[in-house]
Image (cartoon, rainbow, N blue to C red; front, side, top):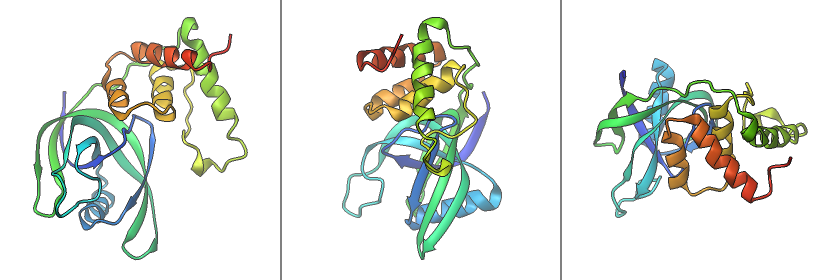
Length: 206
């Protein structure tokens, strides 16, 4: 697998491939990071924070994070207040961290190995309920401005990995469980797990 050098953004959330991630950036280390990503057209990596805080604390615990995550590409930025940047990102490939070091300004930089993207697998009939339920959710958004949708097109309701990832984002699962789902290398198994969760909550209709 290929490797990539990139900055990391430890967050208390899990980004999935093709997912959308809105951020409010005001720390100098991340303002500089976003600026460089835009200038050089390069991504950064989102990793799940397990210790410490998203915002650096002078007396806080050191940052610790899971050594795998998802590449994020900046798609849009707006700034209405000096020193505060609104950033919209899109999830790309998954990766595992090979090495990581924290620079003097607090920014983490890693050498990472890319994880193979999910193969496209058509949703089998026994899991179609999960896709149908997601379709109903998406259909309910017609009165909401598209830039506020939690799921952005193109919609691939016939693809196991895409449907499973969107449910991972929408359901209130613990972050550790979401991360486990993210790194499962079989999209059908991922969807099977989410289908069972949806069924337990009465969201699957026959």
